[in-house]
Image (cartoon, rainbow, N blue to C red; front, side, top):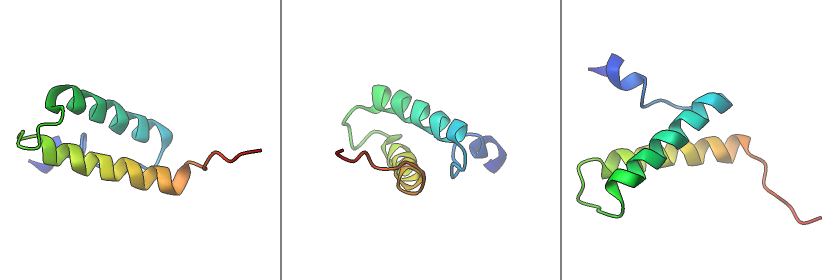
Length: 65
């Protein structure tokens, strides 16, 4: 079971991996919407947390000049 999930659920370490997760999250948002009872809503939450972690570690904040 894990080999099939590992291609979808992983900690991103590179920009392409990050973008892959963002694309997947966008797809899930389109399908799940705001339905917290949807079977995929927890997966959406986990992927969102992985994206947030990557952004916190790798994306510099925009600052006012």
